[in-house]
Image 1 (cartoon, chains in turn brown, orange):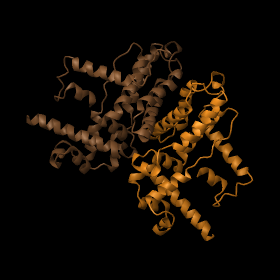
Image 2: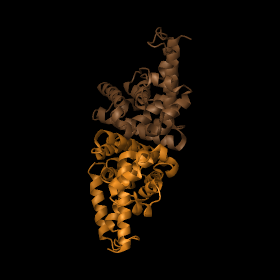
Image 3: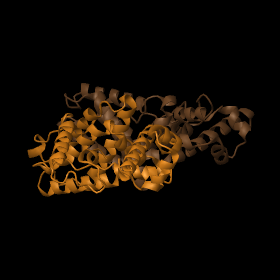
Length: 232
Length: 232
């Protein structure tokens, strides 16, 4: 194995171990020793890539990026799909789970800024476009609604985590949309929006397939394959 | 000042200081020393009332009880009022704010059990009664809806805390109800439910007035007056 490839794998193993530890214990209680134990690497190898716990947390947040879900005919469906895919992936991916927990951590906020900023921004754009197309009721405030949905998603996710380790998150998020869409969607399209809990998995598999088939899927900068890019 | 009265005041001062520290730093990062500094009491006085940080946290949770809002003609209005009053009080009362933060703390969960249990229970009862009266749509699941609203409230509260120290919480919670009631309330009563942000303050003042005027307002077990009971 080439030295560069080994370095990439070590970095990845350390990040994944850090994600598991942050997701389980939070930023404050997490220690470098816990992360070393979980990753099974030597101290020097970890410090070669990350100088501190803070850098590890920033690395986790940086890698917890989600691809936008496939475009749909109705823009409002795309906004709903974002939440449904995330509800499928959060219980399954430590990197995402850790970043959700870090973003919600009041003590870690001075590192990471306002939580869920990027997510609110993306959803505001989607709702604004949906409104321009007449899919959203004219008096709906796109920013305020996006903030309400993102805040709600995170509170619901915390409750699901406490009750059953997020095993029912997809059902709960599906219900969140059922209970909010009647006040958001134009009546003519309300019945056409699919909020079923199984939709997250279906969309995620479609995304993976499309990425694997795309011509540049083996062409990412640091040699990670398409599967890695998606789960990162 | 009688010895008993002094002990009650010290206990109260320690609990309020603990609440401020837990609200600001979370359970993990809070220390007894921080609480002593904030309360301005001696170590011995604190340990006379509370043997550990855990006992302090349990004391805070125990005192952060909210009276139910005044009964309304529509039961669904009472369920909405509970959230509106809490949105008014949370930014103003360290005991409530601390208990919200402790309940959401994954690391402290083994002490405190599932978060927001009691709150979900009360709201489920209110929604069930509202449904029996025909105020709620027949296909609405009372428990699932209560869990969704309580989870959403807490996520929205965290976002408001991060963005502006909860200065806009009443507006955000008012909006949460505006965006969910159309999927919950029977059409005939939907327009009669008041979700205005100013309602929390008005109801809270009404509660305080009624408690102060009630004949047994000076008759609580441990000698706290009506104001204390309410803000506790």
